[in-house]
Image 1 (cartoon, rainbow over the protein chains, first blue to last red):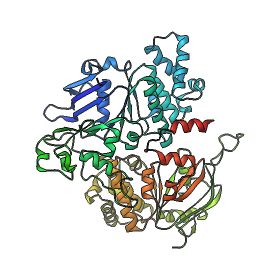
Image 2 (tube, rainbow over the protein chains, first blue to last red):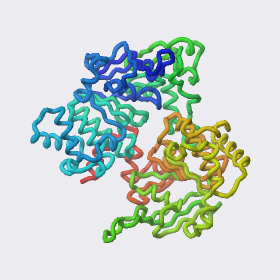
Image 3 (cartoon, rainbow over the protein chains, first blue to last red):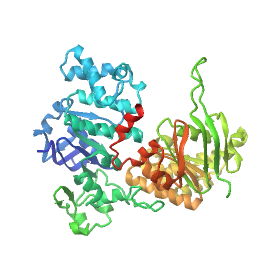
Image 4 (tube, rainbow over the protein chains, first blue to last red):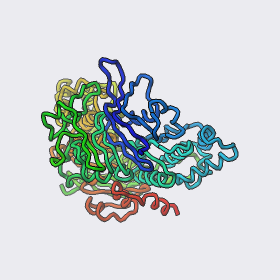
Length: 317
Length: 271
């Protein structure tokens, strides 16, 4: 059974008559012990889907789903009680996630105090061990430091150590490498990969960067305008994308064409969150759109370990 | 055309010591030499702290230079007196990483585009507006955007305004500091296409700073890699991307093609 099983998740804000559709129809299935990428451009609903998993949505959000399960538990009921016990989060900006006026040791201790149940004299050793596990060379010095005395990569490692300190087995990483240098980011991704193997973790990697997906994700889900449009194993998704949006996204990468040639950009804009979408959300921008695409919801297609939603018959793609 | 537009020789930039008795800090830019031929694009690559920004600031004459020369468009750029600098600075346009930080939220787009013109002397309001509208259209936005404000724009639209502002005084050199890293992939493609068009139409020379190797390979004719204030590698794009000699460049070039050795490489570097 998948660790996370989401079907038809919808999140709305605002009035009942004219709601803001933050998430319209997201399906997400994450296997245990894998890194799953959640790919999408700004405003497609990837971060808010992550917030929903953490139970961090504001009161005003109206959430509905056909299925919204974590390890068999209905998350609509228990998300808040799982956060910090089984689900932890790593945010984009480690400097903002750490308290600037407390030493790292104190911050690690706070997490361990409320989650591990260890007595005080053992917590210090546990903190050192966790920091060492995240590849920090001198945990003792790090424990005595303030956040600003550490580099961005070290800060992100401390944040990862805190996530581990909660004992969580599912980590939501929201663009964990965007604020870091490319090579430092690659090291953080390699660390996450190693931790997933060593500690049987599961990671949801929220990102808009295809390099990150290629680098570390076993499988991925592509979102567009609050819809899941395609999901599958990373190698298949990147090598043979089936949905026109995924195809267009990959074709827009600078290495998709020869040097100096024009890049394929996607014309138009994402639909407004107020818009009522009758057919396929991507139809107005899709190069191969047909009349039916604007009128009816596209069917779900599946070729074994790769699924997508599109009116086009597979052999057209 | 023989002389390169920008020619830097043995440039050293060093910031001031932190205390009266402390040792002077190591130079932020250490004996850097590079050339940017007219009409070409030079990609400048390097991690944080490698001296890229200090080099850019030195070219803009925003930090004092310890030694070395910069020749821009035939001038001894560092020797120009302050009085003529304001007038000559129009030879350089700058586009920053985050358009929402570089565009004032309080001004209309027309005012934002008029500022560089005003800084160069009085321009009649009508003419300034016409030039702004023309440049905006060249950058792919309709003239109706003139009355909007930056906060009403999407990231891609705002970056187009920033490019229009950089180009409004018809500079010869365009400096781009991570111009697409804050943008989505499809918007990044639009901006890169726009820059390629503008380069051809206006005969611009570009200095393109980025971490993104896919982008730098796509846009540059030559690449310079900096580390610790020095140029560690320089050459044609093909040369650098096919046969990088520096470990750091290799690491960068391999990224996105499953670079599982990153952590191992870090450990090796430490010991």
